[in-house]
Length: 315
Ligand code: PYC
Image: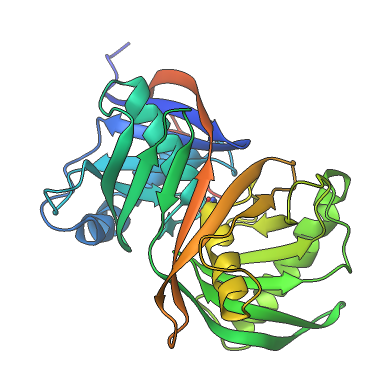
C-alpha cells in the first residue's frame, strides 16, 4: 500500500438561525494577488473542484455555504472572504458574514466592535455586539423593477420585484402558499418553477427566489421562504434577502429610515433589519441586518487524491 497524497483544509462550522456556514481557514492553493473579486475569478476558473470538495457530499450537503478566508486588497479590512455553495459562488452572504464574525471571535482573531470585510461585491462592515449578536451593514441595495409579471408553467402569472441585495432576488409577496415547514417540498417546487420562468423570461441573473407571507411570531413583521441557487432553502431569514426586502419597503415608503423590521425565516429564526438612505432618488439604501450564530465544529478536511469522491458529489 502506498502513502496517499493528502491535502488538509482547516475548517470551522457554525450556523446562523439554522443555516450553516463552513469557514475555510487554510490549506487552499494560493489564489494570487488582487481584490477578492480577482481571487474569486481564479478560484472559479482554476480550483472549482475545491469548492465542491468542501461543501458537497460526502463532506458537506446542499445547504452548506462555504466562506474562504483570503487576504483583502484593502488594508483597512480585517479579512477578505469568498462565499460559495453547492453549485457556485455567492456575491455577499448575510448569514455567512454573521457566522464568519462569530468564528473569528471564537478563534481570538477579532474582539467586539466594528470590522471591515472585503467581499467580491464590495466592502461591508460587520459589528460584533457586546451581547454576541452581529450586525452587518451590507452592500448598497436597490430595487431594479417592481411587480414584474412572470408566466410560470402550471402556476400561472406571478408578480415579483427584481432586487439587488448583494445577490439578485425575485421577491414575491403572496398568501397563495402557506409558509410553513410542513410545506417545504411544495415551496421548493413552486420557487424552483418560478426561478426557471424568471430566468427564461429575461432575467438570467436572478438566482434567489423569495416568498413572503404573514409571520407566525406576532413580534415579527413577516415570514419568508428563500430558495438558494442550488435548490436548497435558506434555514435563516437570509441576510441578502432581508436586505432586498428592506430595499422594497424603503422604495414603497412602507418603512421609515432606521425603523426596525423583524424578518422571520421558515424555521422561525429571526433577523432584525433596518436601513439608511444612500440615494433617495435612485432609491438605494444601506441595509443593516442583525442576527446570531453559534460555532458547531472545528475540523480538518482530508482531500485524498485516491478517494473517488475526493472532489465531492456533483449533481
Ligand atoms: O444570508 O445572504 C444570506 C444567504 C444567501 C444564501 C444563503 N444565505
